[in-house]
Length: 181
Image (cartoon, rainbow, N blue to C red; front, side):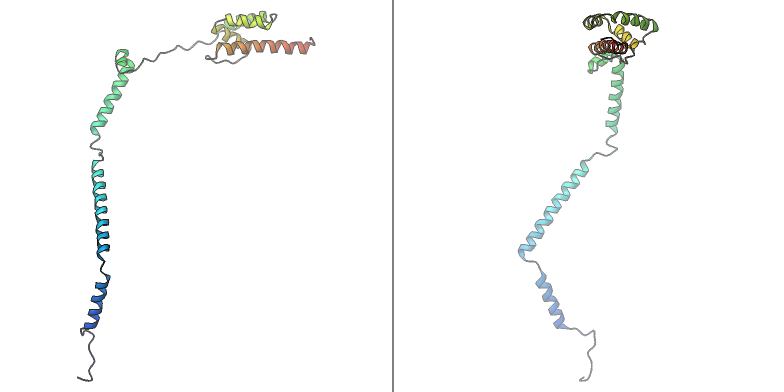
């Protein structure tokens, strides 16, 4: 058998021994093995905690009773708005409804124009005193007669000041135009 070639399927014991040696050399040390086990235990604890937290999250099926309770509370608060006694028990005060002030009539504007004509001869101090004695509706009328746009909520003092300023400015422009000093 001297001239025969070995077949490729022939068992190579040296190669097997070398491979087994490489496997043995790549085994972890005791310290590495303990570290890997510790890391796996930490991962298992984390995943278990995550699982229990996910199990605790309510689902849509769990929220059915909460939705019914919310709808009942909403209906109760709607009823409380309409029923003052029920509203008082749940702490809802009734909404006070204010009637919208009616627009100033042409008669009121005409009276305001005659008032402005009387103011024309008065000194500014007397104009301010007269304006202070007027009610809010009369002040609104005078402001409308002078072309001052004032909201319904304008403060009395601010409106009085605007009216007095407009009257004195108009008086001053007229004196400049007519050449009076």
